[in-house]
Image (cartoon, rainbow, N blue to C red; front, side, top):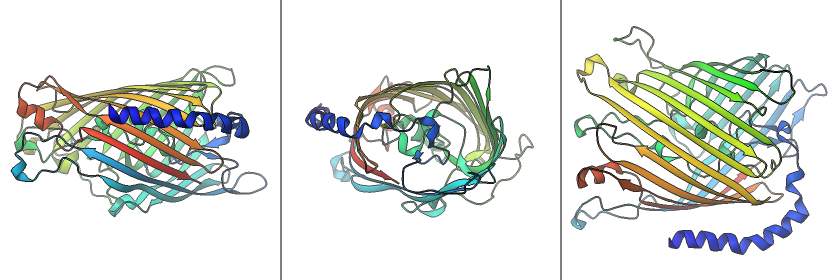
Length: 423
């Protein structure tokens, strides 16, 4: 409660100053969504941000960009029943970090081919190549993309990186699953994130009105290895005799026109957009060829003037390949709901409730993770300051050991202050 009180005090102190800035900057009268390019998946690029090289006919566009996040964070972990003689540190993974330091460029050639390349200098290994793709458009309803990019699963991941309500993704998407101790070498997470593959996608208008009733689709094949591998390393499934790849797709319906992939943008405080979506995938012989993982998800998001509302639920089924000689199957599910509101054009407040059945439906108990956030968009310099707090609670476990195991690696208290710059 003390951390929440500090956050409320911080907001209260800032409001008078921010109200004065509102009169000066008029941020809610900047270009509409149609003038902000979010194809790169990293940040929304407005026409007046930085500089863009463009041919007179608009068929050739080149846009370099920079995205940087620096974060101070505090993580407090539960004792998990361990004796202090083991020298367990309750405070760990704390201090300062740079989650992303991205240099990239994006653009268009011949009026039909989009491209994007971004390098995350804060990462290591194959993750340094954050994205690299080309996208060929036959029409808005028929587009083809190839390279390294986001897989079509969950609104949280598909939101533009610099446009999320919270500085960290829901834990229910990023936490590894918990299985019986003899199987703990296999720990898939629900979120699939970035991967190498190919995708067909597009949007189609369902009526004749200019800005309403759109349907979208994404369907494709990926390695299923995640973002930390940039090589072809897959084989054929011994069980199903098909390529051991990630097969995934997503369908969306947007009754109020194109939904921008944002959870709040101080330059987009007017208008209304809404999205309903379903997605799913099958990762064949994932986790070192030991499991077949199926995923399903349902999502809802809405932007209504200064309001943002988002909610989604997802399910993962894990079954072992025949070579493992394990008949057990596990089901995991999670969900979250979050709401954000711009109290003034430069300050967005948000709350989130995150839920996860991390130890599978075969065992009692789940995690619940409420969180609060305050985002301050510093005018004219493209800086975003985010302060958040999240608590991880445990409920319904049969034994204390189950309770202790369920949140292994997840901090009970997380507080962070993050400064983001984009250009």
